[in-house]
Length: 112
Length: 113
Image 1 (cartoon, each protein chain N blue to C red):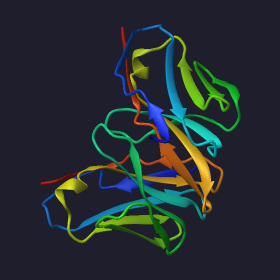
Image 2 (spheres, rainbow over the protein chains, first blue to last red):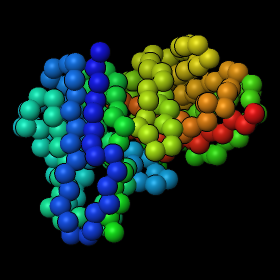
Image 3 (cartoon, each protein chain N blue to C red):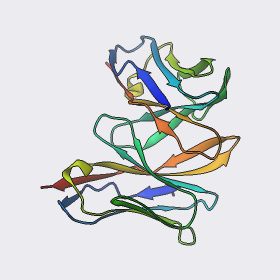
């Protein structure tokens, strides 16, 4: 069966510091990968998606970036965090077009 | 106007009640409809997935889609305290070769004993 792992689960970072969140999917190949953010009391916002290695598309302009160095690895990064980057970040995957999306456990980021 | 509208609640019901959760949408291109359950500080968990109008049943859960009215519902029968969570509707259209999911804001449900 397929599983998705995301880490770290919780982190507190100072403003201006870098960020790296990592996600891996097991039990499948060539998945579509996604990064979402969920701010308190708000819905899920798609940040990035990837349909293959090195192929990243951004949905919203921001100081975050994403990379997919391997087929089942997806990384969310920032060079300098802002207070507004605080939130709940979710990695997700789908088997392909026309299928639903499965989420990881999420990473809570607090920028102080 | 948001593409997907969902009443945020909170909705409080007694154990054993039938719960009705609803979403409306404006984009007729949506083809796939999902309901997710999200416990506090956890990732959303897929509950129901359907791509056609009508009803789909899974245990105590029934998903209903009415494409002509652009309206979807999730019914929970014999609700339990363990059903207390936020329920997110989501809809998908195929765009650029990936699943572009649009989520509702989520309805918070509390089932009290």
